[in-house]
Image (cartoon, rainbow, N blue to C red; front, top):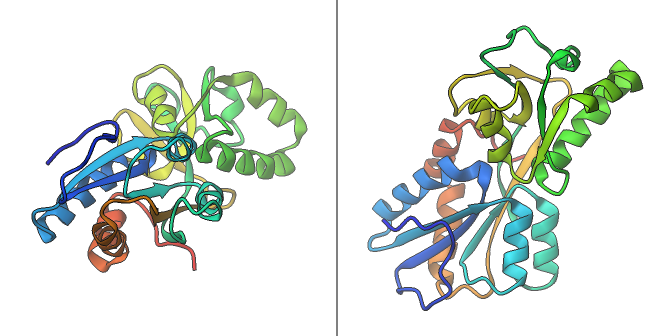
Length: 244
């Protein structure tokens, strides 16, 4: 299997499929690729991971690929409006959690998050950052403006994609982060605090690119992801079913 960081712009072999995917899908799409290859020989899946906004920008600049899987419905809707992708479809969901370094008190909650020394959030340019803003707005209504002001003083950085958010905590460079549940549970040295009452549901959407050189294979990929086998792999990585 070919695993490349960025999609190649040269002519791809007839059995090669390039899948662009949000960074939070890294582990799941990697496993989906292996399973797809086993069921669709001699297909070769080449995934490329980055923030959803980065991938959308690359497509607009002519990056050759076959499928885009995004954590941002708006980006895909815009690409579809410009006839760059086929109609998007939802295929998975996610939630936000507190990710706490194992060196701090695991009893920290969203209310007491103002007591940590360093907090990492997603940049609002990325879906994880925009979902985080929705969560913090809801928390501010519950805990007050002074809580939000204190929290902002703890923010050490705002990262451009979901994987960079959780990496800061996993590597011991921050005390806490607000991250996707799937990312937080996939790393070591992190305690996870669910936020069931306040977390928005993050939706994941995919679509075949209209410029795909492998349209049939691209359609087979999205169908596989939506199949029971594909959905089981996503569940194993902590993703929830797509919202109806």
